[in-house]
Length: 326
Ligand SMILES: Nc1ncnc2c1ncn2[C@@H]1O[C@H](COP(=O)(O)OP(=O)(O)OP(=O)(O)O)[C@@H](O)[C@H]1O
Ligand SMILES: [Mg+2]
Figure 1 (spheres, rainbow, N blue to C red):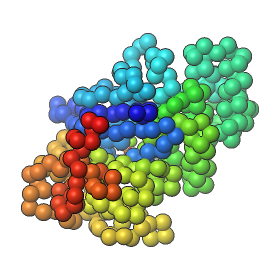
Figure 2: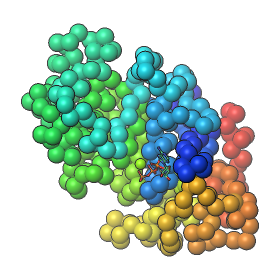
Figure 3: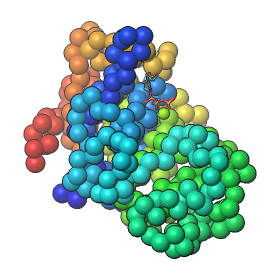
């Protein structure tokens, strides 16, 4: 199988007020070369924790990440082992992720020099990358404060590209930007995927953004994937009540009002996750056993996976366990 990333039973835990928080609770995902997988969910659902765990920045409480067949180990002081250098992350905060005291060119060239390129060539490639992301080589000798949020996000993309990545985890790469920069940066990512054929996990809380560029979409709620399928399936025929509610919350001009549902309240505190289905206290379709039974992802006949007892009740579902082993 030619998967770039294979994520199995991944969990991330933090401690807060002496209590354990399970920010990611047993996630399975795959990413193929040339694929853009959108990862959506409200704030606090665990998207960044999952992204950071995939690249080894966050410790795994359980599970495993394989990148091109190699197990991703947590990063230590020795930095990233060579076989994992082609797995890159663009961080949620374009202000915090670029060093304010070093020239942009030096920060992009770093990755190339570590990979063995001579200094002169590394700077030449850095200049080309800055051109590619629409900034121009003059950015080489400038500092982060001389750029806007949109420009910094382009710098972060150029820096990630310097490692010739096969896979990029892009965490909210456009949410800090104004609308026109949002379109430009997401178009840039799509064209880079087409040019270089890397796989991208595109994290966003905004389903209307994600659906424009993703091949598949995974919907996350309180640490778990509740639905995953092609963009067409998720956007035009959402199954999980949470997915339907997320789409219903999108303003009409951009939204898809197919089977609208309300989304009352906020994501609960992960220190105290609801019993049974974690979504049940907010679910407009809640039924009597939803506070007891933990729904597992089940594959529907159309090939998408859904974790909802109600949605899979009357359908021909295939147990995922039987598919996983293939
Ligand atoms: N270092 C940490 N220590 C303790 N709790 C944390 C830590 N990082 C994240 N959390 C908690 O874990 C949960 C998931 O956070 P995470 O940042 O992964 O969510 P997110 O989906 O990326 O949210 P957003 O859309 O706001 O970026 C939240 O409840 C958050 O408060
Ligand atoms: Mg986040």
